[in-house]
Amino acid sequence: MYKNYSILVIICARGGSKSIPKKSIKFFCGKPLISHTIEQARKFSWADRVVVSTDDAEIKSVAEKCGIEVPFLRPKELATDEISVIPAIIHAVKMAEVYWKEKYDIVVNLGPTCPLRTMEDIKLTIRMLVDIPDTEAVFSVSQSHDNPYFNMV
Image (cartoon, rainbow, N blue to C red; front, side, top):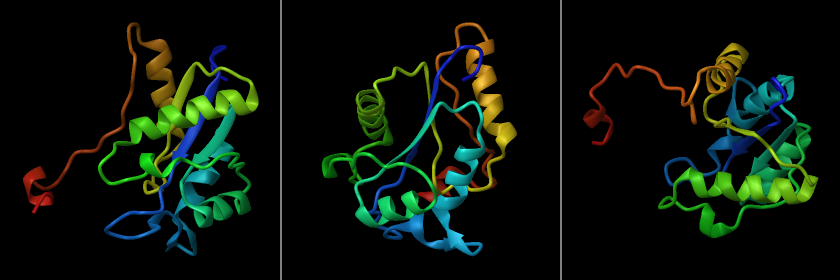
């Protein structure tokens, strides 16, 4: 909770990546990639709940071993290359609200493939969302060193 705003943290990790299947559970620095994000989420004291949204039983098992509850699986139709993460987040919020019988004021999406974010990065986004008038969403970005069209080739 931050300034009486309840916070739900969602970690979206689908199993069907075309480039690197199940990349969220590939090892990075000695442990599954998703575990770095789960550790951050568990240390984030402002979070009222943390949930992993996945369509994959193996990713679910890894998340649970890292201490995160995975009370539901994401439908396969929300885990394809053609669909954005937004419908998966909406699904996770609705399912979490039903499961825990709670409503959330703020939803934070922590991507499992971004293990280098800091706790201060996470807190700063919440502060910006709450403390800057008329702010409805905050996204973190970083400056690209290459022309974005290069990445499309």
